[in-house]
Image 1: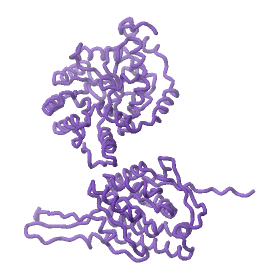
Image 2: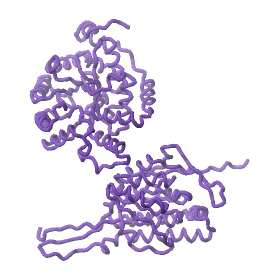
Image 3: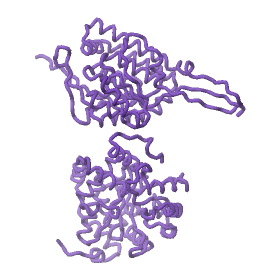
Length: 285
Length: 323
């Protein structure tokens, strides 16, 4: 008798759990030839709301963790990604419509990129912070701090590497994140959520939604409890509208720019999600 | 339907044996049925205009509560300001029904409410050695008199759960009656809410018995919990209490209110409670004079939902007060 294959249900990742969409919906993902690949959950605005709540409640602990600790936790994620290399390779090959060989190289680059970001965690303070000379009996320090909850509309042109590149920047700086995965190729993002769930990243620090960008992105853009939004995966014609909706709570908006994801990013990806806090402290107390 | 009876006719006599007999003769609660019905009613979907109505209704039914050892006069004043105008950015948000504080802070609360135009917001005081109720009767009576003379128009008393659980229903009845007497009579009376502390009563049968005891002894409201014990106002408990109130109304023609307190933290929870009320006692009870929700954190969640409905986008904790 032949064995019945156990097929995976592709679900959302919110607050460390894997719920289906509250709406009960799913949508069909196909490969470049139109063949059926999977039925991932189709997130609604309420899933986005729940994800923001989860990210907000995870923020105090994640942002207060020592930079060294964050770095170790992120490195651990890279270790686990390595052990899922084959699954990632298949996902990227399908999602980016490229051969297995090239997909494997992209997965390597993604894991390396993650390690690169993990290393930055405890170095940003010394690069961006300063003790400032001031005319008065004060110590004056400038320290980088995370902005808060970041919504990340993952790039549509790179299902894994593009996501890793932008997500790593947000995490290593101490932000918590709500990701809206690549719409047509969400599988690598879902695999990543399974990696994150089994690593030491606390629940709620990363939340991953799959679904329609046009439907969910506006709710994240207008959400008053989201502090920054990266519009990388938003269609060019929608960018201005979403940036407008983000103004109500003075959200930081990071506009999409096309780039070669294989190229090492500049630290601007990280500084754009940091704020500099300056403290005056009287000398002698 | 049987003829309307007065309380005395229902009880025949207020001696302890008669009370015990009456209470023990109450029909048992079908536990599975009660939990099933509460769970079924919790699945009702309340959307759009009904949701707008439900949120404002729930806000107007809140007894905004602070019952901490660390309460200060400043905190109580801040609470009063919030009670009168819950959302400073939106004057259409209704005031809450009452603020609920410890006995010694009643004066501060009343004075501050009056000075900021909150004459319509009542002050409720928890008395009778809240939350345990472990004190002599003389202390409990004086506790209540103090609250009333300081300006409390609502008294939240706790029952003696020890006496109740050991079957001494007569003692519980007498205590409630005595406090009721201190609360006075007529229009100007202090409204008496009797806290059953259902988390300590263990069974739904006991909840029904305690509800009837309190109503027979003259309670204006029966209240689930002190908020210090978990579980508190779970939907099946509130359902059993609402059914008792409904049955009492059918027998006596007297409307007794219900206050659900403890563990109601989200707008969703609050709306579920309103559904229970509407489906059990009917829409007459959807009024602050007959249904209250004792809460502190709940108000912020209701305001966030309200802001979502009025602005069209999700709000966040930065836009409500830190309590």
